Image (tube, rainbow, N blue to C red; front, side, top):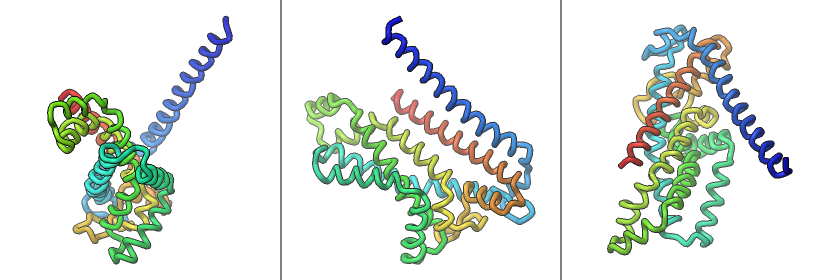
Length: 274
């Protein structure tokens, strides 16, 4: 056996080994949460009114969905349009493009607790929003914007140049090429960034504790406090009296993430077929 073949086999074994290890860790985490949470699911956990006796997660579920919806409304269009500007209207080697990319990479690497402190100082105190839904939404929008922007940028770059050249040859203008040819072709890649952003919004707790608050109620307006599922799970586990309910919250959290990822995958397949 030659050295090259031996090296290929070693790499193949390592690849399979790490893949199996990653999958096993995922199964262990999911199984641990399901075993600890499913037996303790009960109807009172889904009551619309939270009390210290039922520790209902329904207000947190609704708050989480509202938080995801509002954050994506702000972050996704802003991220996509920024990516379109950088890829379609700017020279890839310009200083502005390099500066924006460096800034987005730096923002993506900042810990969420720092975003929480930033949102606390800016939106909660300086703007006077207080611990509210709008303060949490604006903070999360800034936090997930680099993810949406970078994935959208890479998706736009992956669109073959022949699509643009063919459209220009037929007399299409710049805007028509971008919105009729380039963006539809890049939607699957853009949706991948939206899925990542959605997962980060759902799982975020540190930034929201400082901005959205921890009051377990269904927000009636943008200025009301809102406790998301991840914050709800943190509060229950931190109190130490409702550990079983915290595991049950984790089960619902996993279920919501699974449903949203599945819906996004279905949408991506429909777009690809069209």
